[in-house]
Image: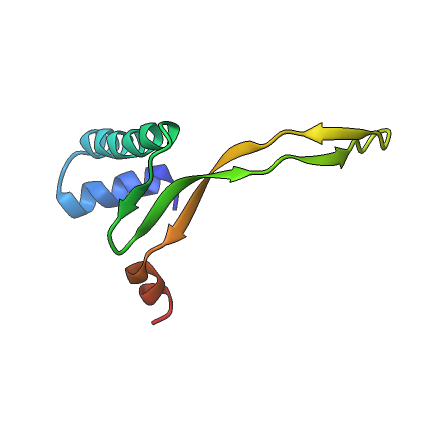
Length: 91
């Protein structure tokens, strides 16, 4: 399922135009995006939690010439499924 499919599903379920459904989806995703950029955790009950995780830097190798190079630490988005989602997947 992609964003267009999600928009169609919301439009059909709520009985609203697709344009309005797309706007609502953009608001929700934008709000989650902004919270993660601020370093906040976003928890949606029975669905899951989005949070920012830190991946440590390490010394890697350049694949072209084999030279050692430092790979910096980076922040990455993470998701952990909630109890309700886990149960639904395993029923």
